Image 1 (cartoon, rainbow, N blue to C red):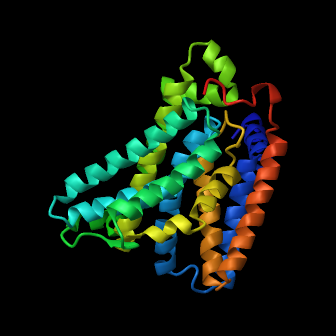
Image 2 (tube, one colour; image 1 turned 120 degrees about the horizontal axis):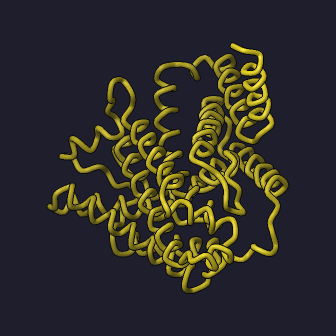
Length: 335
């Protein structure tokens, strides 16, 4: 290797270590090594498999969140959409309809929910945080009132192929990881190679300027939230396949904060306009290791929430310092 090439590699390595991505990568490696040394059961094959599966589900949800955050939005209704759409699909399947038809109905429900939320934000000019917070409660309330009554909805007994999604392997690799990888690749291509992706970044950078250049902000917002809802539904299917059931109590859990932690900690700024799929992957790995390690250490749930809350707060503060909000472009634009 020439001296110039070596110098270039050193410069790239130095730049990586100084970036948020590099810091998160180093922290993830250190956490993995530390937990492996201190906790004998952490590095066991069974726990590594459980870690990979849980990380994949969290990562899939974070992909949907990342899409709307890049466009300067946020979607805290994802968990409600996930549990209601999947639960209703299972209820339909146990009512005599085919599993394929039931899953299609669940997907349609998720998309409709996402579209309605997008319309509320784009045309109703409601702030995304308030729109999705209220919509999540409405979706969950509708689901528990009209679609299903039991909190735990088991996978239909004749769903042989469906169980392979969460429990099967392809060439030794868990299918959940394959699904996460495929979705990562798909979103990467959408964001980097399509007009939809370029316009998403433009909206996040400066909604007003994006509108002036001819971008139709409103239809874009509706599409982004529809895709986010569909991704949440997909994550719910993977979760249900892994656990053989979907628990509606997840709506009242802190999972949405775990998703936000992955996105912000990974390096996708809440002010929009920047961030890539690799940021989601790095954030997912680190948060997954952290959560798994704390669980094995039998740290009380309340203390775990405290740790996650502090880390999320620090990540938000760092994000606000690294990516300061531009008051001239702080509005959502043509909402």
